[in-house]
Image (cartoon, rainbow, N blue to C red):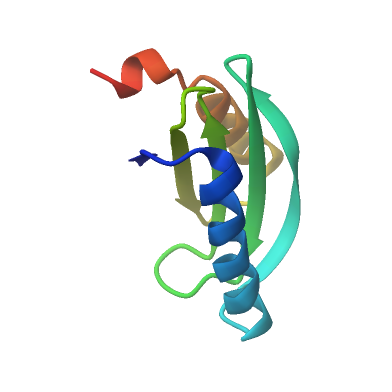
Length: 101
């Protein structure tokens, strides 16, 4: 999803909602941290015990430096190292050039 809001505005709003849902027991925030995607600053969260077909999610927020934020989301069940590495590669390969096409 590409949002026409800067990460300084969009990400805190999303984090508040994610934390509120986690505190309500909807899922658990497994880990989180700052990373880089395509040379842009990014923030990534790993969620577990997500209800529905897939019990895990990774969400990466990436700012483009021009007032937009991309939100990348992957849902999965297999928690193997290979799966986690593949998700990090997919999220890490994101480019705003491809988002505009």
